[in-house]
Image (cartoon, rainbow over all chains, first blue to last red; front, side, top):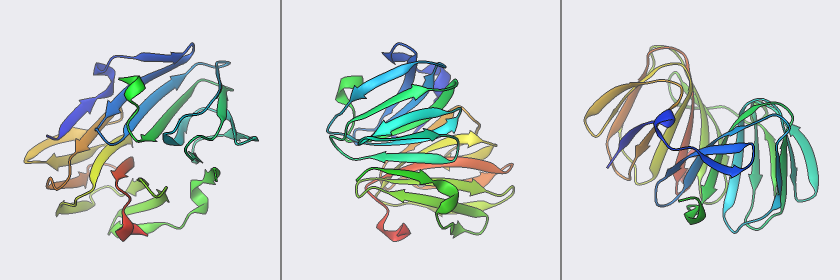
Length: 107
Length: 107
């Protein structure tokens, strides 16, 4: 069944301190609408899900596969399965992360 | 291999007149960064790919499965496989559409 979703009506989940997400799970993909607080750090990690991070607002320093860049609105980052990545919010940020397959661990 | 993508560096593809997309294909999903021009209409259609439309800017009138709503930033719409949907840009809009599986027809 289709659904019109008001994101503010979804529970907020803390991924790590300072990174909070509202999550849409379709059964195939997970879409995480993430608010990151300036200065917060997502430590290096990896997962078998592939990920695409889309920066909507703010500046996010990302390190992926050993390469570091400051990511700003209009930038997206593709992270294949099992590639090590980390992030630091240079400013408050709004990000949309897309995961395939679904993040069962975020349910 | 991971990739840091500047969306403005990607070619723009006209989906229908007034709806233009920059597309990221991962092999599993397609992420369409769509700019829609005020007044433009995406006629009713369906496809086997499931879709999640995320409204970043502007107002988009969407009809999905016979239900019509005005969608604004902070709203997302899940469209299962083969559900009829259409859209009209009430204002200029920026949308991020996520498709699973990949949209081979958009390559």
